[in-house]
Length: 385
Image (tube, rainbow, N blue to C red):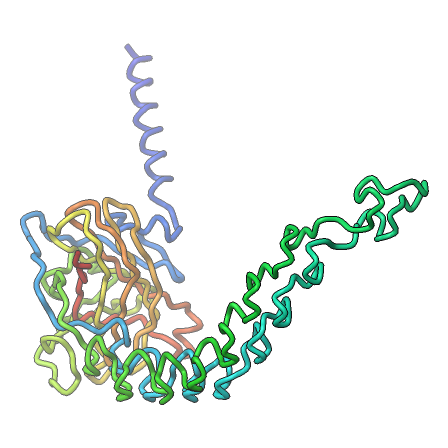
């Protein structure tokens, strides 16, 4: 009986020891949204407070989102707003092949004649005879070593031309004598002699925005487009954080001049005397699986009397503890910042989005970055079929 009790206690002790070692990981790969880890010096902290999101459902709706083609600046991505920038002629309007001369066919050297037969129509190799010098005996008719009759040409010194197969016709022009590229017209085969760039019509204007106003065609210069997306509220979508390490403050009724969506954001910073990197996790609620999404996050600037220094933030998307995408993004302390992730596919009906600061002690002391995150809006942009 004593041996049995001791055996059971040994098993319990071994299981406890294994759990202890497992929970002490300090690798970023272990920082999944439900890990409740606590670490210092750039690794941060998360977990400890959760809210039930099992019954929450987010349906996609059409919202005003940042234009991804121009990154919100409203400028044509090809010419960057200049109206010039044809990638064929580089804005000078001239044909890139003839450089605006309208001539010089490269194949016929502006002669209009076949560059193989020089307009004779005859095969250049055999000069139209259909027979060329025997390459074995070099036209001597005899074996160069033994002096006997050449076995290849039989002493005739010439053999059937391998270029034209004995026809005597130039295989490039088929005996027509005219250049098969320019058909006898020694003008540029790209612009057909009109000297103008065929892409921009000779005006050098950008072929993307066409009307040369320099505006992005996707958003018509507005910088925003109406896009189907799942909207995650910065207040209601908060899923998990550690209140012992993270101060969470709701900032509302922000002046509209800041351009912050709904004039509100959630401000996260370390608790007093706890200058370490912090982590918070958001939940998507219930969404459609097997769909392609891009994450777009709006970070607010500092709108109160705090430091205007930006933050270096890591953004990771998880589905069933599997990381779908991860990026680092530096926010501005003075202006609204918008981050857009790479495309990813959600296989389940819910995802977790983890935000964390990535600031070293020296960066904080030198005023390079701070530990503050200001999350104003989270969109899951839905790639429509």
